[in-house]
Image (cartoon, rainbow, N blue to C red; front, side, top):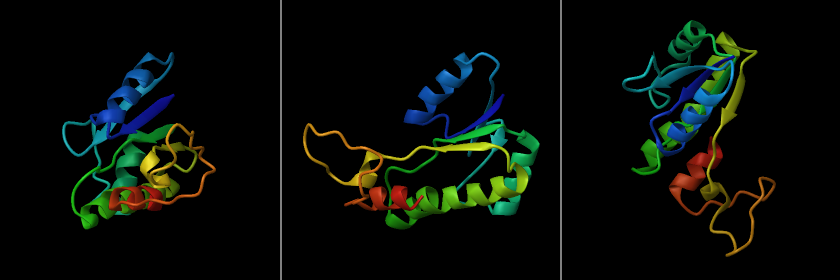
Length: 137
């Protein structure tokens, strides 16, 4: 199975990459802005360009760990909201059978209640630009 990991050098991406490397039969493909096997910039790439990259990679699955945790609201929106939309459009064109795993953030749910678990079915209630853009993504 060919698994393309986007953002594999980040906090979560490093851990995902380690896990993919350990999977029997998995072939890890690295995608990112710098130093990656496949050049991918979700904040700037047009869907057509990303589709060409995805077609070349021919992934069976894509794990999107890419994201921005800081910066101004425009930068956060470009990476965290626009990026997944462009990725979905490109996947639909170039690799429609590929599975997509998109990593979110607890910030999408807001501050929560201390010592209480937050499930994925909880309503989104972000209080920061980061949380809002991750929810939009």
